[in-house]
Length: 84
Image (cartoon, rainbow, N blue to C red; front, side, top):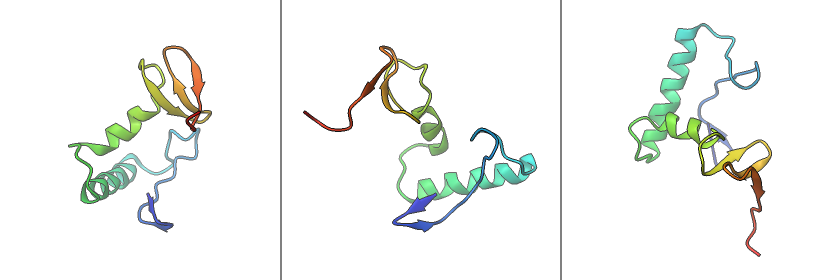
């Protein structure tokens, strides 16, 4: 978790960006720290980490962030980041 170039929390998921190599309790504590910091930074969500997880969930029919950019998931089209 980075703000203005300062790293506040770091939790690596080196296996496909999905799996930690740390024991599950240690990874869980790291996620808890990130969630707590998100709330302190003003997130209105009860569980802000879930909101971040669903942003990239491309099977939901809406605009999603992916590694290829913004995608209209239902139409499977990449959306420009710039207004015409």
